[in-house]
Image (cartoon, rainbow, N blue to C red; front, side, top):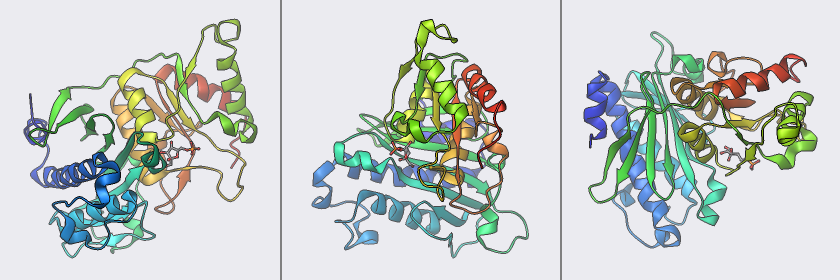
Length: 327
Ligand code: F6P
């Protein structure tokens, strides 16, 4: 079975990008190890204890952030990082050519119930001549040079694209290596499965209400087929299901908190997932337009997300076309 780094080389990935990805996978293996220790994680040692001394009692999302940040900032190829857990970007003492944005532990409320969680990452090129500031990161998703996630489930999987196919690797715990287990993810165009937090139904805007209520009508309704619903409450797990067997994943605009009408972050959640979904043959939108075209206004910007099987995303967008964007 092919290992990660030789596969990247066979894909003609540059050595500098391989080195950044290598750093991410080293951090991911450490996070995976700690997660699999469960409640024991606070008392068992780890190879990186030195870097996070005194922090072993901290929540795992903080530990995951510290690991990724520390290792990436040591890389000669990284210029700066942006993280869900950091208010501002963090600059590296090295002036590498890459910027890395990440959500260190997506779906972290699942940790308490031993459910699936993941790390999402997006790699951008540092714009030439740009002063070091948050502005460097404000690039549309289509500018990403690589995007991926690590799913810490019963198995730890790395799902990634460097602009070519979406490759899926599984961590072989016996040798501590990610091995290529799926050469090319391919999302079926049609689906009978959707993922949404139904408890927000009363807060949704008209297009998504109308769309979901037609799905729920099943064979008797306008769609003429029965749909099944799944919700893991961790984007990584839900999108992984979509990448593995198709489906539609959405976290739409809602009116619960007018100052926070969207939940998911553009830079390090929606954009990398959009790149993966598109490269696997699916579509990724905010209901109205392509997610990968949206230029973030700030690093923690939130956005509405509708992604997955191409034909189903088109159907969902048709419902949106009849209504103006809520904001
Ligand atoms: O990043 C936020 C997140 O945890 C996603 O991973 C997930 O899709 C969503 O929030 C879950 O939201 P809710 O708590 O509404 O189920």
